[in-house]
Image (tube, one colour):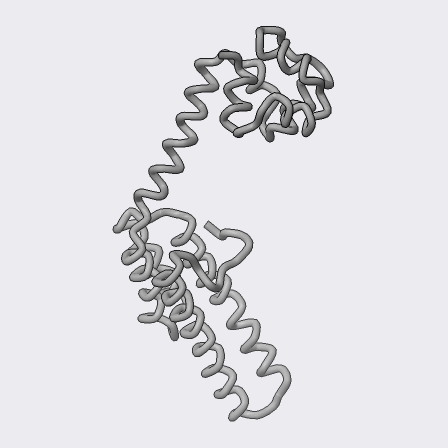
Length: 190
């Protein structure tokens, strides 16, 4: 089996579908699959259409099979190692130290390492706590600079803490129901 054919079949595409998407003729795809090495525009177009690096189309078949198998193994390992009850516990551990911001990051981080739950969900939980810890003092300082009084400052402090409690509890409920986070960042700080 040729390199292109293996990748094309991995992506569940027929020769005609690949031809239509890449704007490369079916005959050219057939030639490449029978052993002709793709070059120039053809190589770039096929690599871009298949969302792979050009070098993958030029590698030997055994290398491609090994890489595809490695990707499958990594995906399977990550899905197998997700223990959602542990992830909920990691998330809830932030509640214990909600009024002591550095510890609301440290506690879930240590539990994540101890329980060996270093995955995208736990990284997002810790990243969210890091972001909240960075933003809470900024919001608090803005409240002080507005000089709206001591009562307002106290209410603001309570609201800041309650916002974190709400985020933690809402994420825990979402992990329980849908195995994902309700509040998450579009980036990870870990």
